[in-house]
Length: 219
Image (cartoon, rainbow, N blue to C red):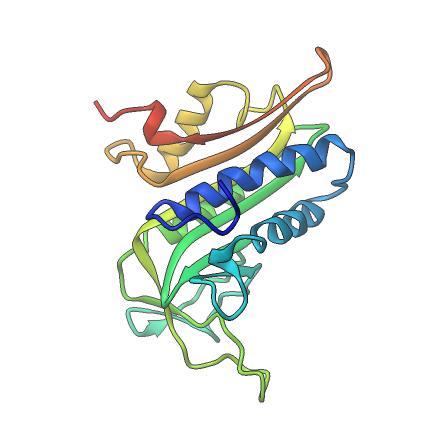
């Protein structure tokens, strides 16, 4: 499938999965040296897709937007927290994807804070939470456009870590962590984990994407 041919409801998911395959190639060339570097490479790859093209793309990417009382309200009340997600994906005036990124290929990442951030947004999906993400180029201040979190927002956790890390070591651990995020009585709809598993002992490195609802069907 060409970069300009994705035109269906799953186009964001498809773009992310394909992007991860390209990230695997870049990583195995030894050309990702930090978490910011990983973010930059993902942004560069994703911007190749027609859905993200400047001016004509239907989706926009915001990198580490600073969300606090100055640009966010919660049911028309001041948003008292400070949240800085690694990436936000929008379509029109909806936040349709939220991503956290962790890059510690040689060791064990501390992922709990990332999942607290994802949980914060998950709980506000389809609510009165509004945030300004765009900047008025003439003043440098936030523009007046408000974005709301879509009811079906895609939660994405992108991690490259040691194979023994709890977040990548086996499916049951992944299930446990995501269950804490969205609640045991919820399905895993719209939860995507992009994993790079680094195993120095066997000299085997694997990259894969997991849609949680495809592996763990609600009982």
